[in-house]
Image 1: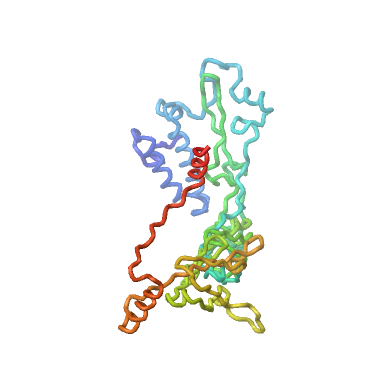
Image 2: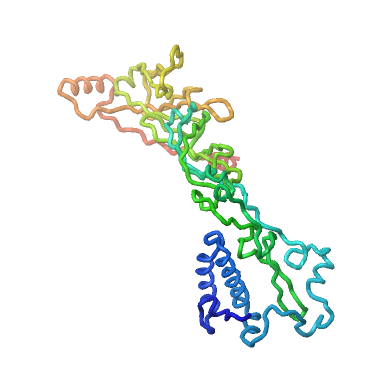
Length: 392
């Protein structure tokens, strides 16, 4: 080599590995054929890549500093010297000449066309929409196929060409010497980044990637019974792959908004109603709205939107009534229940007449000076079993 490798990379002779790597990356970004496709720049890129290949390898760098040829052939002394027998021969004997990275058939060029990534987006829905299903319009920003180059990354009128460095293999061989002899490994070609082809004139719209960002509108069908965290999969609606490859999937994660009346527990709905003390004592009928009341009424709809709840006389505060089949439909069929909790309101302000009537009622019921009753804590199942054994 007549040109000094250190001068090619713009580093001093005592530069460490990190400085050499940083210098090469900066030059590679400037000289890469995808950026500067002219022949002079391509030749310069090859020289820089060859310089980095030598200076990044401690053994080759040492040989170069001593004035030797780091790419020269010949044995390294010891095992296999003068016999033309290398570590590659050993690998070929075991793998039939097809050992990846050992001189046989390697991995081959990388595929420029690859499947796109899956995408995830959150969608907020109301409780009634999650319960009974709906269709929502969703705007998503994803990668789509570039309409200028139709995904191949080349400018209109141009085509990718075979890489001259690796001759389309996508890999270049590197030979190292060891006590076993020569070790031949394959590395991705730096000129074509392992693709085996170079795009001399990249598409201006997508910069050679074959895809661009775009906003799309999708109609997402939400099945009945979804809950917080449920993911709806839209096949092939995700990111288009590099090189115009097949798109990934789009996952829509459901988030259900809170409801002012109902609380959801699985497929059951819970609601609370408050009653005056007199209504709880005498009994009454309440008109309770159902979750269906949140739906937009359809023409000639016979969907029930309320329920006449019978409150029995003497209902205690905290008691529950279960309305079977008025909860949330299940994803696999069936429907949960609606659990209604009754709370009894005790009046806090009484006028003289109301206080007089209550005192009269208390006297009739013999409750002028109630002593109260201390409720014992119910025993657990294990406690009852223990008492049963002690009695025997």
